[in-house]
Length: 328
Image (tube, rainbow, N blue to C red; front, side, top):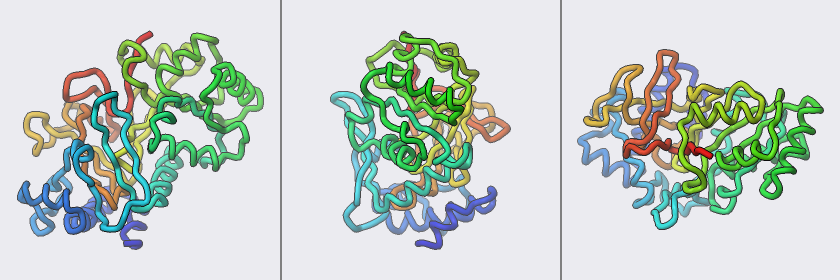
């Protein structure tokens, strides 16, 4: 297994990705009872699957009703989705947290730079209250690796966040602000800022705090309030180990161990071409001990530069998987 895991994190091109993906499929078919049963129901197995497009994708709802694991020992941890009151949440059972840490580190550093070079300011009150959040685990790891003592979760006074942001700006520190949507909007209502060294990540919000707002309008408001040109986002979820990143304009790019396919919403076994809207299927090879092939309920489309865009949900609400849009 160590050899396969090292290959996952050494992928350099699409041919290598497909070869490793087929090996991961074989492993999970043989070792994941839930996924193997789903594949057999679809009439698929390692003997008749030779391309990525033939690999079955497990509906993400299975994480709410089944223990989706590719191991037999007791899990060392689990992550759960935020959900809403009264709704069933997804659970992602973990065999080895070091693989998650290796994955989110490689994802971040592929698109930005070394984690320790940033000051991380996290404004994520609801995620902390939720517990067992994969996002909180990741950012906590970033905070501990940062060389700046100001890196921390800020869940008290918004004035403290504003003070720290100004301090980082004055000292020309590379800074990243991770914030839930409503908290970022609350912050810029207190004071408008003019940030030159800070990347602002909008991580989504919690239902019911504000009215929904389309991404373009939300990001325009945040850009004006923080004095910046773009809002960054990450596309990740508790069921995955990898994250895609957007530096602005809502265009996400996948790390080397991750790939997005767009399926026809009326025929989920058919994939559609660039610039056409459909359901998002995610391949996350780092999710080796769970399921690497997940059919989400997100809508999106792929562009010619291999970026992808999120366009809502298949149930016709105006939210995306982990990025809720709010109006104030």
